[in-house]
Length: 333
Image (tube, rainbow, N blue to C red; front, side, top):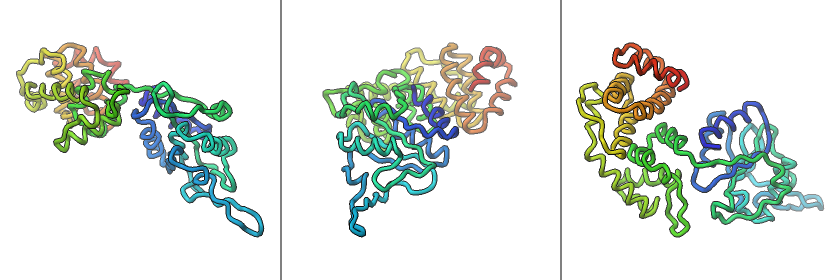
């Protein structure tokens, strides 16, 4: 399952009040925790994010306190006691067996010690697989059988859609469109390697004028820096957005990716978007026009400008063939 598929799936569980315990599997750095946080925010739910690998058994079970000759377990203050939300048990299989045993009681019975999970709360968990070279413990079959299991895989289209939405560097997105295999590539020999999480760090480093190598490693950083140098030779994008450019579409593949992503990021207004589309229809092949249109249409819909965009495209004589050929894309965006 890709990140783009996972978000609506989790939202469907919430909207249908399916309080099934859920285990989310996936390699490190692909955004499992971020997706759960986004789903909580979109559905107006509280989120309690517990990293079980960093807790001791008493942190979750609570402390025994003598009361009237008996021991009573006082639960920790971070566990929810009211409202609705998601209790997210992250890194569950990095926790030692004793912690997993306590988590099993929480997941199975929705209680541990004297604490009970409120009715309106979902219990979800996440962890890495052994194949991801993560330091994990084997999950007991009794615990595994308490969950429904979802496998999350790295996916560039999902990352690109997220990156465009949050304003990630166009150079990062253009480079990964050109070299999607470098979006997530574990390097067992080095501590720094590319992943969606480390590309966000690379974006932040680059914005500060610093080398991206500490985030994504030397090999990937070398390729990325070489790609960024291509930007010096790109056609001027501003005249294209104004509908005044006579520049040709670049011949080199990496420059083509850079040009199209640059136009997508810069096409904020409907007129700019349509001018760039007209230029691509006239200068580039259908593959590049569709690449531009796919992301542009999604962004314009998110901004509430898609209706105006569709009307403008339909009114342009030079885009009538595009509108006819791309009707399915337009109405599914």
